[in-house]
Length: 157
Ligand code: HEC
Image (cartoon, rainbow, N blue to C red; front, side, top):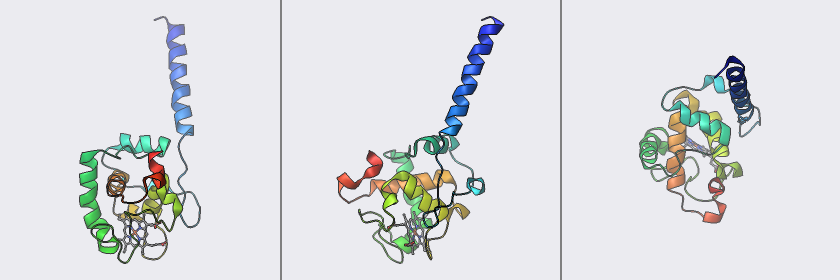
């Protein structure tokens, strides 16, 4: 490859990278609508998966058996005390049916926003305890145990 060609190829590569960065989704607080400060996110785990989620808004772990299993264990430690062991609801609402206080939770973007940024009262922001990778795994378990109307499963669309 001559230098001119090489330059053209790398320039095209740069354009690709910058348009991917532009395509990144803005996550917002479920209550205030303010953009979530992602700089406080705990890193760790598979960051490539989270980067993909930031671009598509779809959880790459949905339907991934290993992630669902890990998500279940994490859920039992971090969430079940308030939401019940089967996510049937306790102090906090049930998470396995198709009724959502925040309708955006029928999308992966909405579910992530509540996890990361919290909601009202005892539903505090989870970035304090969990990495974004762990949140995606918990989300994949919540989708796995869904018992609601399949037509309302917006995350599948
Ligand atoms: C200390 C108790 C507590 C813990 C721990 C907790 N939650 Fe919650 N959660 C709540 C309460 C209370 C609400 C209702 C808040 C509201 O309506 O704004 C809630 C709301 C939610 C909602 C919104 C549900 C809807 O109907 O729209 C989701 C999703 C959720 N929690 C997921 C989780 C997950 C996943 C975890 C673990 C990572 C977790 N929560 C940990 C208490 C808790």
